[in-house]
Amino acid sequence: MIDHLTDDPLAVEVQASSSFNNCFISVTNIPKMISPRVASPRVKRTNSYIRAHDLNLSGEDIGRVVDDDRTDIETSERVGSTLVSIDRNEDVIINALVDIGLSEAGDESCRWIATNSTVSALKKRTKQQETTGSWKNAASGKDVLVWSTKCTRPGHGAEFPVVKARGLINASAKDVVDLLRDSSKVRHYNKSSLGRKDKFVLSNNVDSETKIMSSLTKPPIVRKPLECVTLFYSRQLTVEDNVELDGAGYITVGRSVWENEHGRTKSSTTRCEILLSVNLLRDIKTISGEKVCELTIVTHAVSPAGIPLFIGKQAALVAADAFIRDIRAVFEK
Image 1 (cartoon, rainbow, N blue to C red):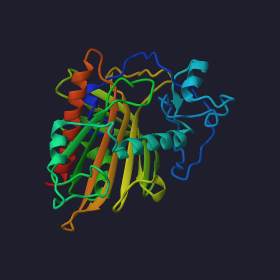
Image 2: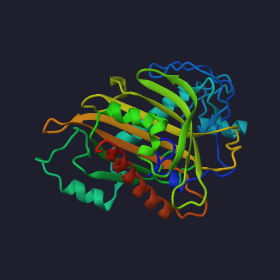
Image 3: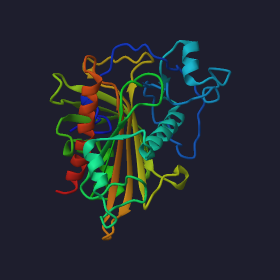
């Protein structure tokens, strides 16, 4: 199993194409957007770029480049450029990714299609069962719940499915998020990992962290190692996030980054592309009084060329289920 943050559950199915016929915005000087949720000091220049076609950045967000209220998609069509520079703009990018991540992880609507095993698990539940959070479809017992849905955000990668999985971990949300943050511990739950390192640490505070990570994995279904370079952000949840909580909670989000504004890599390895990686962690207390953590993951990624969508989807569902179980196993040793 691969690391959900960079070696994402869907990363076994993904690689980046050398060219993209899609719309992005190219921004070289977005004004600093100070947010109450993110106020990260810039440590050093990363010279990294990220896709922003679905981040709903308006003309106000990129006011020094455009002079109207067009969306980022319309802007990219007008300026004919590609990606957004992360340097000096990480706040507005991260806040947009967190908004999307919380929306997807907390969405319990019927747009999510449950796997057969998930349908069976939910039907078997009783009022006496040791359940968990008060929210709909909360995790319970040893079950791992898995769903998939179509991407509702237009643009690059919209044809690929979004996968969500949920399960209980016998640890606190803080312990689990600390595990996911620590690049030195990836192999504890990822047998396919060849290593992960932090390339740039943009901020590292008590309750939040922003960095760019690089990882290599060698899943069984690919001949060559896959490289992931990802912008990763994590922080503790607050009441302003409007997330149902029974205790402390944390969110992590990630998206692939590139070395240039054209979405190309200088690396000789096969680059995989993660469009969205989310971990939502919530402390809960079972009926018996046991304190555990519910982990909800969401992944949206680009499948390798030549792999049919239905095969990639099935592999992604299996990978999401395995990721929850692999994290769980770390804390049961």
